[in-house]
Length: 527
Image (cartoon, rainbow, N blue to C red; front, side):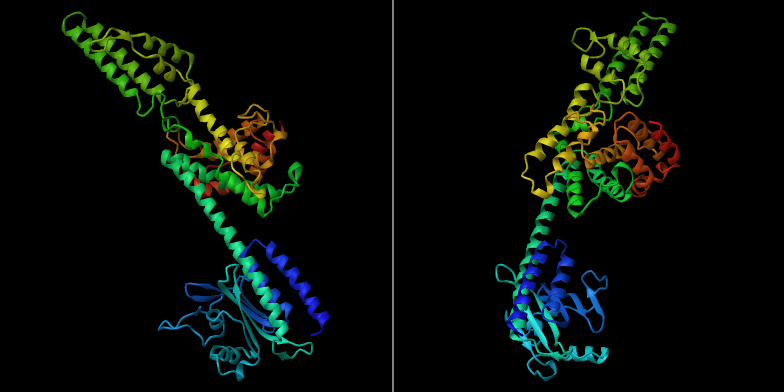
């Protein structure tokens, strides 16, 4: 090899090192290492092994002459067994070339395997006999990480000359491959380190969601389902390619950033009191206080019966007043569930009951309902008072505060904005910042739709049953017309049938009714 040729290969080696550092997928990285090595020294074949559990495991195998590719991104699994680094008696395996390269931490360069008596090439001979190949020259180079530990072996087979003849690997070939193996080991170690840190980070996020789940079983499910639906819709928008969102595309970093934002979108709920999060009835705190009202009715019914037995009431009066008390008790039990919006007549009747007098044992007479009980029972819709709703809503402010306090790396800088915007509205009447559509990212608007749809269809809430698809999508359409959620994104949500894929995974068969998508799209078109 001339000096000019060596310098050309050296320049190629530097370019390969830069390319390896930029690769983010481990399987592609491993494949790139072997392809680069075979190309660098014109090797016809090669394998790459990684050390695991005191053995060398095949990760990729390439053979140009045979057109053979296994492992890596080929989709063809390697069926060869691992190469043990130790013998059965515990001694190091020095008979196998790649195992010896690891155990002795040195490069092994063999000009002709068939003429070599030091190593066991019986497996190679069987392969050659079966395939018609001729494995002659071998170069086994250990891959050392930044701490000098051998993490794998790069083995090249059959250096090919310009005359297309098999020749031995030269010392210059060996020097170049050793340099490449060193760069490759560091790139692979760095990628593994990044992946392990990502795994640790995601595990920490899951711990937060587990803590929320422990406080409220249904909220934890919400924290898992919303990210999944968010990613499903984001992929659909990225693939849509029409309308005002035609240019929206997701790359690998975008996907990971949105995934993390989805997982953290409700992390502020860790500070929300349990009795508010899980408030299934209007009077529920740590327990449902309707039982206290039942006790008061029992007192009134007892006093009524005593008055009747004393002769203070006629049978007709007793029956009428008893029926009235039982009716009022049932009325309070009914409105306590908060299922339907309260009519004005119901509110007036509630006021009358609240003003009724009762006398606790040893105390003075007092109104039947306390101020707090009346406030809760008078909730027009749902089970939360205005103050409790503010507590619930504050979780998004806490979420933003928590996320903005973290030192996000460059590829995750948008997590706080994505996660913190799912309660904003397109008309600026959302919270906490009152942002309008044009002030929000597409990702935040996507998460807004995912959050609402999950909440509408969730079947594990303590205060309602999960809606059917047709009902949930009709409500979403109305919300889009009212500029609550993004109409253009909802259109893609409907057309791509993301809702159907989500339903197949998370909803019951009873919820999966027929949906007239064309009618919903027609409503959106008239807006």
